[in-house]
Image (cartoon, rainbow, N blue to C red; front, side, top):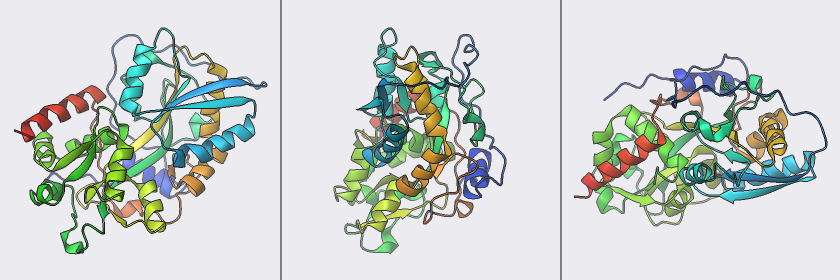
Amino acid sequence: MKHVRKMKAIAFGVVMAVALAGCGSAPQQPAAGKAGGSEPAPAPTAAAKKELSGKLVIYTGAGPEITDPLFEGFKKKYPNIKPELVKAGSGELLARIAAEKDNPGGDILLGGEPYAFDTSKQYFDAYESPTDKDMIRQDPNHIWHVWTFMPQAILVNTKLLKDQAEWPKTLKDLSDPKWKAKGKIAFADPGKSGTGAGILNGIVSLYDWNFVEQMQKNIEVSPGSDAMFAAVKDGAVPLGFINEDLGAKWEQTGVPVKMIFPSDGVTNTLDSLAVIKGAKDADNAKAFIDYMGSKEAHEIMKDQVLRRSTRKDVAPPQGLADLSKLKMIENKPMTRDELSSGFNTHLENARK
């Protein structure tokens, strides 16, 4: 089994900067893939302080349990700005942004790994937010802005799997043929879901595509992350994956599920946001970037959303797992197209 370098790269930085709330230095992460073409123009300075009004169209894959508390805080700060939400999987949203490049329909893309923005940087505008310096990692080109760190756990439906001895302990256990007979494992389509792409990136980084193909014999592909989460919660399948914050909320409210952090490696994502190139309400978009990087917003994220902040001065939410006891997978830089096409190719082989 491939050795997981514990708490290195971004995972190490997150533990030091997030779990210890500002006691560590910014993390190192494998360099994301670079798209061709010239480097972005120098980022403009922070948005000028002025009365802002009008629309703000936000493309996101995040659910209301995440966006509602944050948007409420934003609207209190900017009461004359009216956020409009367009929700879809991040893969679909990136494709939409590319198709709309000559007449953008959105102002912000909320959600996605830094590499997703690096490899699509022609569709986003640089903006140097005054909050960038407060983060555990920042884009030197100021296109993407990190806002949360998310480990993922295996999620078990405890009504379908009553015997804990049957529960998987590792990612490798998911390749056991018994899961095909027991109802399969929900897995979000990485071509449509950023969460699915992040989980796949981690599994490929820890093992390889041959292992993925063995696991795919046991999976049920979900059209997005929400569908993957719900399939386990509702008992359609016994297993799947879950973002840590939502899994913790479900456990705390008595939903019959249990999170398992695999001992061989935990998949994880660093979520970011960016201003869409040519945004019609660019000043409002920049104000949203500033707000999402503020300590106020990150305290809301910690206390109400139960997600780990990427600010150096905000502690993790109470009740979440101790990161120092988990083996975070160090993700290899892969493009969304590589992940999606690889997944589909090996899925076809697995189903033969």
